[in-house]
Length: 510
Image (tube, rainbow, N blue to C red; front, side, top):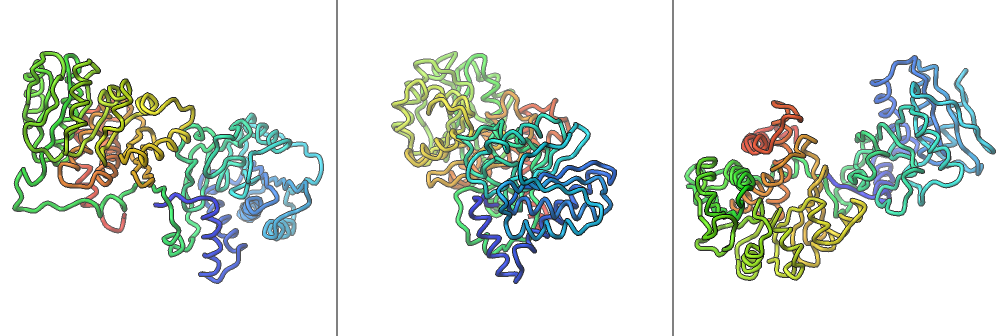
């Protein structure tokens, strides 16, 4: 699914009108109908609903919603149209004319000073003040109104976007002056700003509503931002040849673990094997031999000469992928070994955890990363590598720049994990749940991605498939054990079933 800009959505609406031989107000009626159905499914006709409409088409959407709710028996609908500049859009004016013909409708048009209606936590507010057409943040009386709505405790439903929130960038926006929705009903496609943590309070729950936009125009519209879903992942997965052997599914070498941190190596190795790699060799501190061989008997063990940490990262055999980082620590000898690996290896690399911390301590190692190396930092590791960031929006922008500059793939982990390719394309994942914020979850992700690289998938695709499968496995495991009881081992255990689910799910669901 594409993530498009406000301008793109506007152009697609225009193309939809032309392709379907309808007018823009027909689109408005379509929007209002879907929004009304959503409201009716959630609230009884006795609910007090206060509609706040602005002078543009977003206000027209809200007026149409008010009319439809009133016609469906919602008699406690109060409508306030803010027309302080005496300049309504054409469609908004048309919806106003329809609304005022209803006998008994509680409608107020504000042309001068506005005294907001009383709002309480028992009320529902339909926010149609400003939508995607807004060019800058709310100011003056509009920002005061937004704060008044937020302070009221009322349940807020925003149409398309919370008033004041931009679809793309909000770095210069004061979120206090943005309406804070409990539910945002967006038109068919998500906006980039939906995926940043700093905007979550303003968005609330967000849901896409299908308004039958022209699919051909959507396909033709270019974008560098996508949502990863089953429709993206399923075609990438390769069926297994019934005559294949273990070496046909690739060999992964994992540099992981140290004294006291062997669990990281175990979870990563399990994930490699349970994601389909044919062979996995773990190189770790000598003392980890018995632990690793007992916990993951399917994996081979290559002991380091040091008892407690890794000092040698030379490759003694051919491997289709080398994964480095989980639990290796940042000892000087480990850093030296990693530096030598980066200079000499020709195998694809997946770097995580302490591998990234080692590099962060020695930034001159960043240019040594071989082309198409996959790094999988969480936000703390990312900031140690590339500088402090206060906003997710800024962090993602830096990730795009760094991926291009160093020709690497950055898997920026979070609630919405983003896979950033060297071309600048960003794929955002939506599988997963809060229960996955647990020790070892990142180690499992590293193993899953490494496994797909070992099986012959291009690094960009391996990262995309890996984050989706990782999140799906976490969702499936949480269904069994609950989010509070979820562990990284559960995620690894469900990985194979998650892959099977994508393979076998009915094509109609894709």
